Image (tube, rainbow, N blue to C red):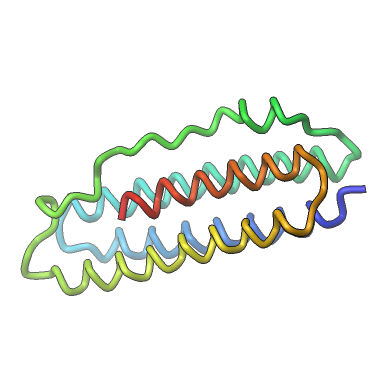
Length: 145
């Protein structure tokens, strides 16, 4: 019934977990508290995304329906915490921060591209709304960088 959606959501969960691991590693290696805080906050947001997607996968895999309203009212909000600010980065380690931020931007853009492609593979309005929500999540992170 939702075979394509379940496959895409499974990949999305893996993507979010990999993002969590990357941002956690970056945070643990940060040289300043502000940079560490920024990456660990982003890591936590990736975990929230993964949890939401796991619940959604469970519901769909058990034959449940997901309405457009449930997707829109997912309860997962991503307000900008204003943590990606250059005044929080130690200027002596700016090249490391730039590298990590650059990789982060590439990861977020790859996620956006993944969900854009996913939208082309599904037909239901709810599925399209789901992928639009996920694109929105990733856009928030991309804009933060």
